[in-house]
Image 1 (cartoon, rainbow, N blue to C red):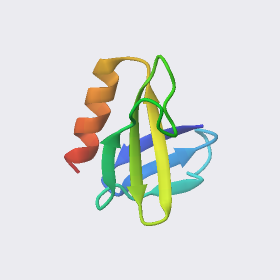
Image 2 (image 1 turned 60 degrees about the horizontal axis):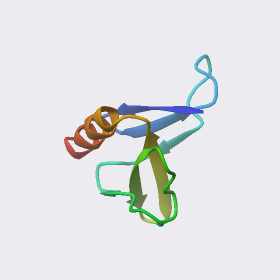
Image 3 (image 1 turned 120 degrees about the vertical axis):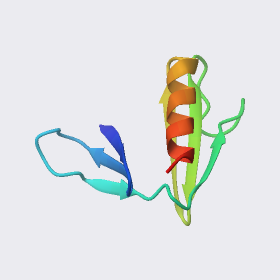
Length: 77
């Protein structure tokens, strides 16, 4: 699975040749770093949690540069 950040939110895809399977609205969501020992934390990853109403997702990045880029991009929507 992968996602694409658009002006309406994160679009989830299971296959790049098919329409998205879901949408996560990021405009009014809460965004924060996943802390050590928090649900969604994994050693070796820089993780971002997004919470919107009853939906919650965690994005994991292998590099701090990718983490900062995603975090900034989501905040700037």
